[in-house]
Image 1 (cartoon, rainbow, N blue to C red):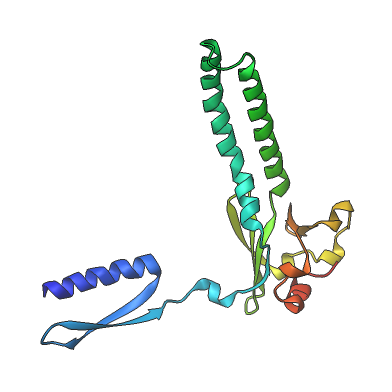
Image 2: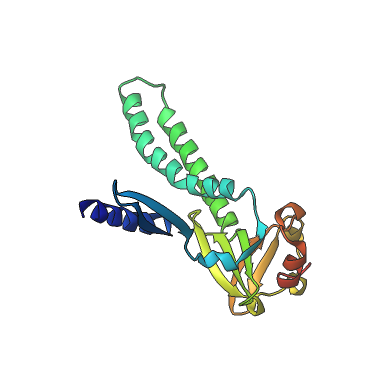
Length: 202
């Protein structure tokens, strides 16, 4: 009895953590041996097919998040350098140099976050419901997932092409004025036929 309770408890924790179903049956009553059949649970992403992936997205996210680390280091290190300068442990004006370098580096990472905000990393397509799952970055470098109906997506062929189009396309939806950045190099497009039909071609 105790063994069955322990197994049921372990099965519940296993199901919650890994999202799978485990059916436990007694196969040898004499020694209470068990047999476990593992089946994958229904995954909502199974209906979505990945048609686009920006391989360097993790690097972009890391650089965007670096501003918080850099700002924290600047705030913590500058007073220590000032204290060292006060007791003549470091050369004169070291505090000013450290503060300026810290401020400039933090500003550079912050500017990069503004530029990389809205960069699309993954696009998945659900043919049954005719919707897109678009994963992009926010200002803090975190991932933001949106479900977008294909009918709400403005085709690239309808957008004005500017100087930046040589590097990326600025995408938009009919229902909002928010924009996102899409790098359309061939190596990022996983299914060219589907991509052109739902995203549009420039």
